[in-house]
Length: 59
View 1 (cartoon, rainbow, N blue to C red):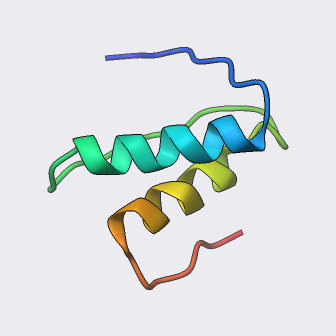
View 2: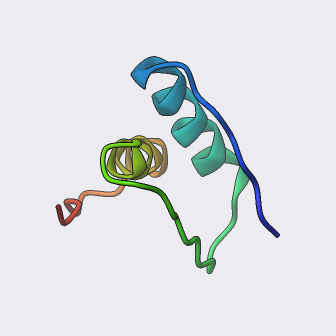
């Protein structure tokens, strides 16, 4: 499955990450593709916050 989602700002990215975290069940693999600076790491950080993970994100 492929999705293309345009988000207007960091707040929208954070909201999406937290919502995805609440909706998905593990185990699961998610691949993020995008140019440098499009918000992949921000989305993963919001996802982790939504799942209450304690590990950091590699830059």
